[in-house]
Every structure is written in structure tokens, then in C-alpha cells.
Length: 395
Image (cartoon, rainbow, N blue to C red; front, top):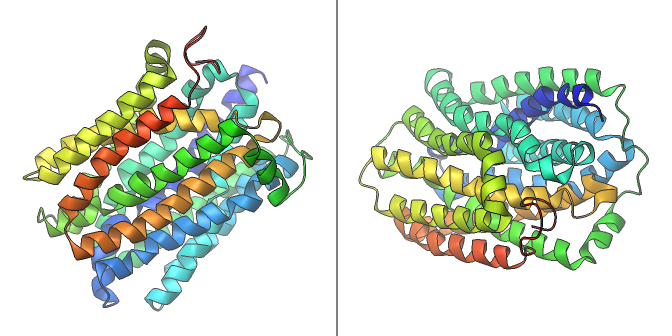
């Protein structure tokens, strides 16, 4: 694909990733206020996290093969329109049960967006340049990390939590329409393979893919859904911040992600994938251990920025590897990785919510720290030793 044709969809893909990523992150600073409004515990309100992430993962069984068959951009655009409708319905939810159900629906359709965006990049860019190009698309997810929490927290304080869902629904509606308009002349990848479980079973027969999927599932359970979603609640209940202040604190994680998107080409070239994974796990462990001991928001803010950088040093490698796990059906392969990641996230949110309710935030963060190191070094052991150009498939 020519450079001009490649560059044209990248801002739209970044905007699509923002909309989907914001849906996953916006609820975190709202959990305490939603728990109060619906008269449930924080653990009970965490069903709003688990409901989104479990269906986000389960939907990958269908959305990945759909992207391979009908084209990745058309499926992304259609999914965004359905996602917008579900968010607008969330704003009208009369009770917690309805809100959880609608969050589950929004997760199922949002799940098509980010994996297929990454798969589109995989179809269009050589592996040696893939992490750098993916980092451009990741800008949308970074903005979601930076803005979703603060905007949701401020909107909740000023207008109520329903305004947060309605605003994001409007954004998703506009972006979905623009992606569909851009997708019309981009049928690349259409007609590839069948739908459903067959492609996923084919992927599971590949040993390298199986190890990659296990890493993704553990990352989801221990970090994406385990420790990190409860930082906002920790800031409110233990550091004494308001909902909007907690949203701003959570956004510091996004500063680390932003640093990764700027530094990714240099990191890949100088460190290679194996050392990036090890450094990413170690950085997250240090940040989580420090967070467990943080005396105030200032220290927590710096630690969360470190955690964000470390997270994507590990996750960025897994993500790039997912685009190469089954090159003839990248939509399916990346969707399968998202399936295990978000299934793990849903399980982790439930387990860590129960652990925090029974013990304390600081214990949960302290337990997640050594788990991050163990995960990173186990993942590193499954990557090929460096050979030739660092960052290439043989590295």
C-alpha cells in the first residue's frame, strides 16, 4: 500500500480507538458515585467493568473473522454506530441491572474496533515498521487514557453520570459515520476465510500463538482488569480526592502511554522486544509496589506515569506479535488476543474487587507487583532470541 493511502485512515483509526478506549476507562472514576446512587458496594458496582470487558472479549469470536471476510474498515465503522447507540441507551438506564446489561452490549460491539484497527495496520505495514505505526494509532487510546477519566469525572460532578455516557455516544456516532465513508473504497481483506470458531481453532494449533494468548489473558487478569481499574477508587477512598481529581490522577497513566507512543521507534531499535518486555514488567512492578506505599497523590501521579510506560513496553510487544500470529487472517488473530485479554480483565476486575472489599487497596497493589515481573519474564522466555534486525520477527 502506498504511503499516502496508508496515512489517510490513520487519524480516523486513532479516533476510533479513542472512542472504544474511552468506553472502557470512563467508568473507573464513576464507580463510587454509581455505587452510592444504586445503593450497592464498590464490589457490586465493579460489575460495570466486568460486564463491558467480558462481552468485549467474547465478541471477538465473531468480529475478527467478520473483519477478515468483509473488510476491516467497514466492520469498524458499523461497530462504532452500534456502540454509539448502546452508549446513548446507557444514559437512559433506570437502574444498575439495566446499566450493566447495556454496558455489556456496548462492550460486545466496541470489541471490533481496536483489534481490527491493529489488524488493518498489520495488513498494510512490514513488521519492522509495525510497532512504530501502531504507536500512531495508539495515540487515540492514549487520549482516552488521558481524557476519559477526567472528562467523565467532571461531567458527573457538574451534570451527573448520564452526561458522560451521552457525550461519548455522540463522539462514537460521528467517528463511525466518518469511518464508513472512508471505508467504501477499501475492501482489502474481504472474503478471507470463514466465520466463527474454525479460524480460532486453527490459531490455537500454533504453539507460539498459544503462548501469546496465555500472556494476554494473564496480563488482562493481573493488570488491565486487576490492579489498574481500582486506582480511581483508591484515590477517592484512601487519598481523599474528589471524583474529578481522581479522574485527573488516573489520567497520569495515560502520560506514560503517551511517552511510549513518542519513544516506540527508538525503544524497539535500541532494546529489541525481549528487553522491552523485561523492562516493562519491572517498571510496572516498581510502580505498583510504590503505589501500595504512596502517602499522597503527588507520589501516586508519578508512579502511575511510570506504570503506563511500563505497561505498553510489555503490551506493545504482545500487540505487535498478535498481528503476526496468523498473517493470512490477522483480524481473527488480533481479535483472539483481545478476547483473552478482556476475558482476563473481566475476571481480574471481579477477583480484585472482592479482594479489595475483604482486605485493602494497598494489599491488592502489593500482590500485583511481583505478578507483573513474573508475567514479563515468562513472556520474554517465549520470544525468539535476537537475530538480525532488532524488532523484526526473529528478534
